[in-house]
Image 1 (tube, helix red, strand yellow):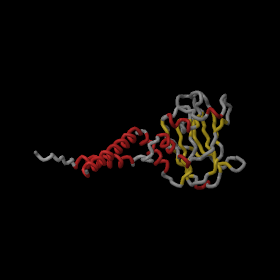
Image 2 (tube, rainbow, N blue to C red; image 1 turned 120 degrees about the vertical axis):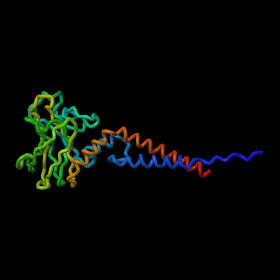
Image 3 (cartoon, rainbow, N blue to C red; image 1 turned 90 degrees about the vertical axis):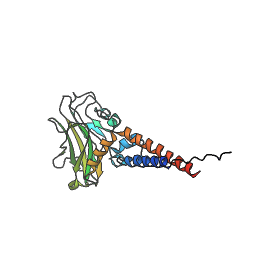
Image 4 (cartoon, one colour; image 1 turned 90 degrees about the horizontal axis):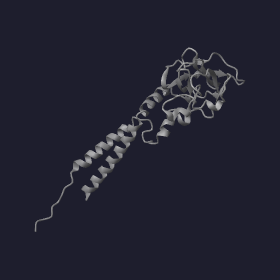
Length: 236
């Protein structure tokens, strides 16, 4: 009888699968928190995560038909998943003019990064940081956000080294009634890193391609499993 046929598995199949897995896994590290596949968690990191000021509240300091609870999520911010993390001046559209003030917080780090959106440097609109004393009185001039004006979220880095240990408040000025007549801000992020605003902006840009991050993770997983199966087959 003829001898049984022996089939030698192709060694290149496993090598190619391993190469694809390594390339896909390496590409994941261009994202912030590359191994975190919970998009809600990654979005929260775009606003500082646990580093952001906690317990901050906002309220109207000019006459308004709305209560302070209407400020949260009151801005047409995209992506929608971040909208409720911002406090805005558009609870019923752009017609409302008002001034909104945050509760005081301590400047504990030399830099403060404020996530914001809207039209903070237009005629009548503004986003500012107010330094206050223990009695709540304003100390010096308010620090104004220089922009830029844009449709999406941006980050305002504020140098507060000369005010360390003092208390501060965010002020949202809305004096416009056109389509850009709103300002919104999220709780600020104290930091020692003066480049944090740039880093967060870059991470936010990458997060807009979150579907690619998920796809790369799936490709890496399938490729590594395939490489393992090919290696086990050759061993047998």
